[in-house]
Amino acid sequence: MKGKRNSPQQIIRKLREAERLKADGQSIGQICQTLEVSEQTYHRWKGAYGSIPGDAMKRLKNLEIENVRLKKAVADLTLDKQIIEESMRGKW
Image (cartoon, rainbow, N blue to C red; front, side):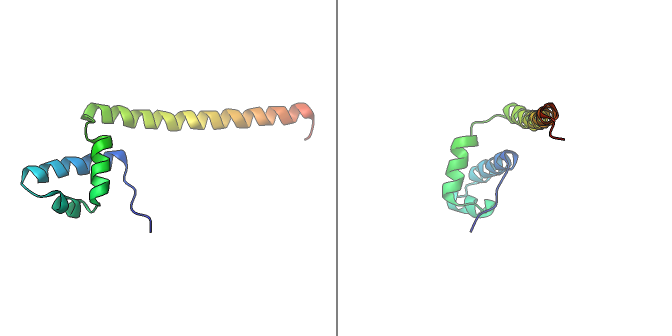
């Protein structure tokens, strides 16, 4: 059974919530129950996203948007190239 996928923004939000709960004196097990994740997932997220500051997260989001735009541009250019190649062969 596959679990719910979280975006990097959601993960960072949950880690911030975990830090707040930890400061309130809750254990890791209680925090994981509140966040609805396993302890293994919590530790994996903390290792991967725990040290990312807010401005780096904004940069990551901007890069993801730019990546989508560039992938679309490559797809359009590939299609144009294929159309030109077919017209050069005279198969239309």
